[in-house]
Amino acid sequence: MSNEHIDELMTAYLSDLKLALAGQDQALVQDALYDAEDHIRAALSESEDTPDVFANIVQSYGTAQEIAEYYCDMESTVNHALHGSKKPSTAIMKNRFFSVLTDGDAYRAMIYMVLAAPIGIVYFGWVAIFGLGSLSASLLIIGIPFFLIFLKSMELFSLFEGRLIEMLLGQRMPRRPRYQKHVQYDNKLQGWLSAIGDLLKRRRIWTTIIYLGLQAWLGLIYFMTLVTGAILSIVVFISPIVDPILHAINPANTIDIDWYWFPIAMPGSFITFVIILHLAKIIGNQQAKFARYLLVGVEIK
Image (cartoon, rainbow, N blue to C red; front, top):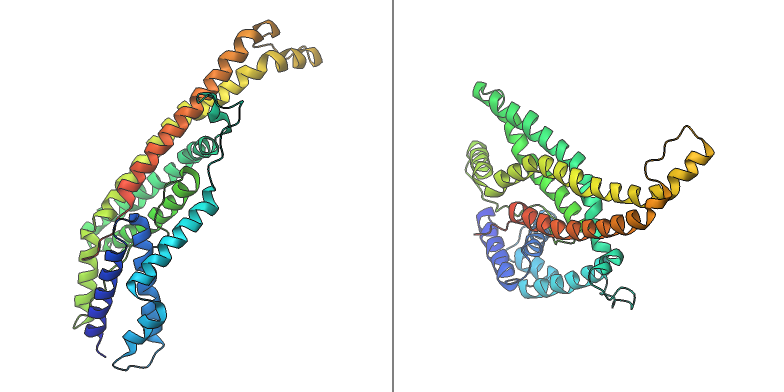
C-alpha cells in the first residue's frame, strides 16, 4: 500500500473521529486525534505491507465512533477522579460569602498566583532572549535554525502551561501535542520547506508567544495584589497576639499592632482574606479562559 493511499485513509479516519467528537471539548478532540494517529502509524510501521493492513489495524483499534465513545467515557471518569463530586455545603458554610474558606478551587487558584510570577519570568526570558535573539540572528541566516527551534518549543511550553492550568485552575487543556497532518513529498527539501511553512503559518504558535510574553507581567500583578494582600491580612490577624508575646520574651522586639487592636484587626483582616480568596477564584477562572483561548486549537482540514 502506497504512502499516499495510507495518508488518504488516515485523513478520512481522523475526519470521521473529529465528526464523531463534535460538540466535545476541543482539548479532548486534540488528544483523541493525536493518540489515534500515533497508534495507527506505530502499528503500520510494525505490520506487513498488505492491501488490507490499514483496515485490519482500524478494526483492532476501533472505529471512529467507538473511539469517540471511549474518550467521552474516559473523560467523565478522569474528571470525577480529579475533581470528585461537589459536596453539599455544611450548615456553617451555607453563607456564600464565607463558603469560599472551604473551597479548594480558591486555594488552588492562590497557588497558581504564587507560581505565576516566577514561571512567567522564565517564559518572558525565553521569548525575549532566545526568541528575539534568534529572530535577529536570522537576518544573518545562521540564526534561522535557532528561530525555528524557538517556534517549535512553543508546543512544549503550551503543554506545560496547560498541565498547570488544568491542575490548579480546573480548565480542561490538551494533554497531547497538536495533530499535524502528514503529507508525502517527492524530495526531502520540499518536505522541509513545507514543514517550515506550516510552522510559520500556525496561528497557535504566535498566540502562544503572546501568552508567554504577557505571563510575566500578569504573574507580577497577581503576586503584588492577591498574594501580598493575603500575606498581609494573615500578618495583621495574628500580630495583636504574636507581637506582645514576642515583646515579652525579648523587649528588643517592637510591637507593630498591640493587643487592644485585636477587636478591629481580627474581623478586618479576616474579611479581607475572604475577599482575596473570592478574587483569586474569579481571576483564576478568567486566566484559565484566557489561556485556553490562546493555547488550545484543533486544526484538522
